[in-house]
Image (cartoon, rainbow, N blue to C red):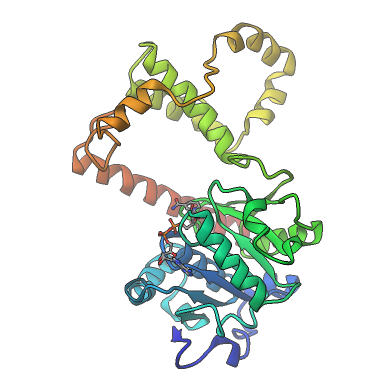
Length: 334
Ligand SMILES: NC(=O)c1ccc[n+]([C@@H]2O[C@H](COP(=O)([O-])OP(=O)(O)OC[C@H]3O[C@@H](n4cnc5c(N)ncnc54)[C@H](O)[C@@H]3O)[C@@H](O)[C@H]2O)c1
């Protein structure tokens, strides 16, 4: 890994053409990527693009975060089968200018704060003329409200990665009211070239697609507990051991087509009137948060957690995601 104060990735030729993983990005013609913010998401995005064969400039103003970045990136690379030598493809920089100057795509991963993101996009817009693509990894802010900070908003797009971004395949590529279809198409090509599963979100709606689905399920899960139908642990068992066991291979609409829309309609006639349809967060959720019961971090949320139990959940999640990513790589290589 280099520091932009000493040398820059832009001074070097692109990572060696003998790297087989570069085939994808060479086809797309995007080889230099900027990432702004080296926190939880940004450092992993840098690792992901370096492993995909790109030269990466990773911008991070906080000295402490910059110092810890190489070790965090090496650990992240290891979990996707990449060696520490890939650090050579990443240049760490303290500020936007000048290290980013030859980036073809820049992905912003700073704190979830609209004013900060608008500031970053205004600076990026001034520094890098079109057709450089400017992408935001915002979880929930409207892409349009970020894009209007740029004079050329047609090249601004959402790239909603899921944590951890190097292991979860999905990237929601969000088209704002101002994004060009060319920007969406190029962004989708880049994501696919580094092994992601990009989807086009055609409208800039709250929660995009994935979080709307996830939180519709959470609303009903909480309502079931609130109504005393079962406890939280039972809800989780029903999801994990029931329909969750097949969700990874069968989406809800595929499953409807599989069993028949006539059956789906018949079930909906009975169930839909009984489902929770509150237009605001549940009283139970509000009460738990007000009491400081926010989950594993405080030892109690919907369920009670010892530190050991919480660690075991984190370990199981991480191990499973790493194994799934390895299986996908093996399948792609076979
Ligand atoms: N954490 C998640 O699970 C998750 C999932 C999907 C999307 N996101 C989104 O990704 C973005 C980043 O989230 P995170 O969890 O990585 O945050 P984080 O707080 O871990 O990291 C943000 C980093 O940005 C740096 N930063 C602040 N101002 C900056 C600037 N002007 N230029 C460059 N860097 C700057 C900070 O020093 C920090 O290191 C947020 O928009 C978040 O909503 C997060």
